[in-house]
Length: 398
Image (cartoon, rainbow, N blue to C red; front, side):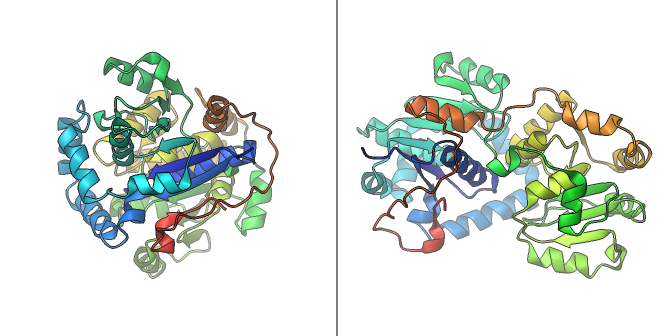
């Protein structure tokens, strides 16, 4: 019998959409190793030359004109992508999407970004007979996610489900699964043991994430963060922004044994377990990973639109606060004065509305009619489509 195949389409506008696709693919593989998954950033795969230019322009716009981004988000908030936009996307960028699907022959397509969801929706209008699931990767639902041809929506919360049903989506088509996180985030581990493993001091520790797009906070916040370096350990994880890493390492203010400056790390799960507080931008994936680890969060520089909505959701739940100097001082004092007692750690373990992090993968398998075995095994590799023109354009779950 042929193994079930799940094809996950994403786009590289931020790291969260593709990260969610990878996380779901790895979760499916862990729970049911005989299901084959493929993750593809569709625009980059089909247009490896043009896509980086588009992504670069998007990043510059987000960095330099955040109010414009927010205005566009709000003015289009209730609108799905119209027929003309879908046609333009198909003709200009996604002409060969149907050929990729024909070669890979998936049993299910899951889209973690509105653009590929719109592209597949149009193909279904033209006769494509493959179920389309749309995985919404934030704690809000912009109108661009909605397509009449979607067979199911996988969403983060009941509130997002209500937003979709308010736009005319049948409640039976919306399943609250939570946003998937990589299986590395499914369990929590010993803080003391991980600090020893990672070469960290066993003192109150703050993990500061961001900077991959050059987005950081101001001097007043930095001064508040570094005021207690003798007592509180700071781990800066700046993603792929090598220039920012070099600049920070050259900053004498950060030249201290209790300050660690990292670039990209594949061990964010361990760093979260080793830390007592997370300072981050409120991207949907990072927020969900922090929630899975039960770590309190402080949010900075939310992009107007979806990140603002993410921030609002977690702040309302009491799982996060918006970053400013006063908030930093309050939390650092709390870390120092309550660190030896159980109160802060108990708060971390009992975060309200904590999702079961494997629920999204288990739900997809249930809908596929596959049991979740909980076993880890190697599955056979799934052959690549013949149209691969750039190895970096295709992402395959290992």
